[in-house]
Length: 402
Picture 1 (cartoon, rainbow, N blue to C red):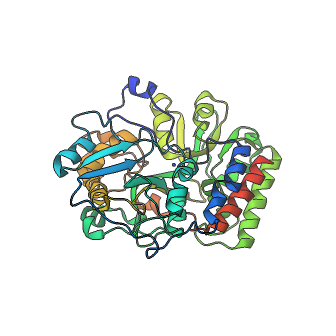
Picture 2 (picture 1 turned 120 degrees about the vertical axis):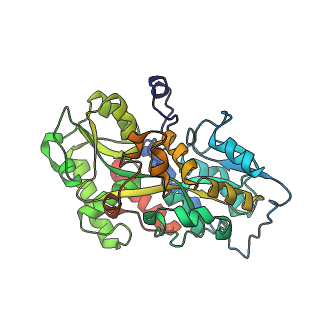
Picture 3 (picture 1 turned 180 degrees about the vertical axis):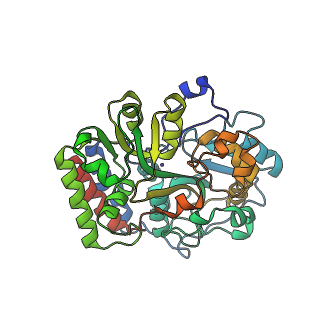
């Protein structure tokens, strides 16, 4: 789950912040979440929706047509209208024109826009789009994405940080290139409470009853509950899932949780309505500019590490051009320019050194450039079949909406 723009953070920039990119399922009510898990998501398993490389062949016109059509999240790039923007630099250097659309407002919503075309092996009108791990995994499972040509991605091969090279859902990165990444951990208001060291403490300490929030995104929240019952989020059993779900039900029933939220937890945390919450790292960086008392903690259970990924759908007509665009952003200097605006984890080795020339304070920020020790204690959620995805979303929605 990004929002930001502008290097060297000025007050006018903070006032103009758009809604954060990390909405996914988070901005939805519990009822809407239940509808999504039983409606939009269930379509993933409908007969005839899946494709294979043999059943859905794509022609690449990149040699003749120097274009790319890209769908990304709102405000997830430096301002494209500026002559020196990173996207303008790419167009000038490559001779490729980019039609940039910020029409990915929610993973499930975007899935609904393209599922009929992709399920029928038809063009979506896009050459590349940027989606979160779990939705990328879903589309890989459905055979809706084209395998990338790594010969067109030399900078990606050289500069992708080690911890993002082999996610469980795309272990060889055949289909995906991380755009930006982030961490899910604990945020707390140091003016209202001392440091909270574990997720277990946050969801059980009676001093926090009714004063914490958890995320309404299934994968992020359930990673912590799986860790609390001793399970590996990347490889767990049905029994372990049931045990983790029972723990979530206990916490919900106890009244410990004020609300399950999307990124609206930011307002409650900043205003003191809650003392702590499950939070996304990039949001916390933004909050800290106005309130240094807001702190981010890596809980004892570890953290969720996630990415938003660049993907090429079936029937995209400019695949090689899209690959050149992906690779351009793995130049460390370009990556640093981008990271100065979006404030999430930069997936590019060497960008930290380049950032010292833009803003040294950002180069030292472990939420943008985490060290190996921090990344070593992170988890991703295992790849799910369409049927598992629907079941787990249904289970989660039933508990948080009940």
